Length: 127
Image (spheres, rainbow, N blue to C red):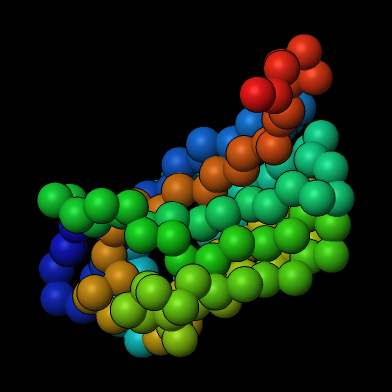
C-alpha cells in the first residue's frame, strides 16, 4: 500500500444496505501530512440508522473508526482505534464522510463504509 517516498494509497469500498448507494472515487494516493476525505452516499436510511466506517489492513482484522447517525449526523469515534484522534466524520445531505487529518504511513489501508438495519421478525415466537 505504499507508493514512493511519503505517498500513502487508500481504497474505499461500500458495504451498505440502502435504496441507493453511489461512490465517486474508489482510491486515493496522498502525501504524508496532507488530509483525505472519503465519502459514501446513501439514500433510504431511517433516522435510527448509522453508517459505520472501518479500516482494513492486510493481515489484520477490521477496525471500526467511527459511526455517523443518519438522523442527527452526529459522529461517534471508536475509542479502541489506536489512531482515533486522526479521524473525524460528518454528514452532508446523503453523504457520509470520513476525514483523516495529517496523514501518516500508518493510515494506509482500505476503508469500508457499512450500514446494517435492525430487523425483528414479527412472526417470531418468544419462549
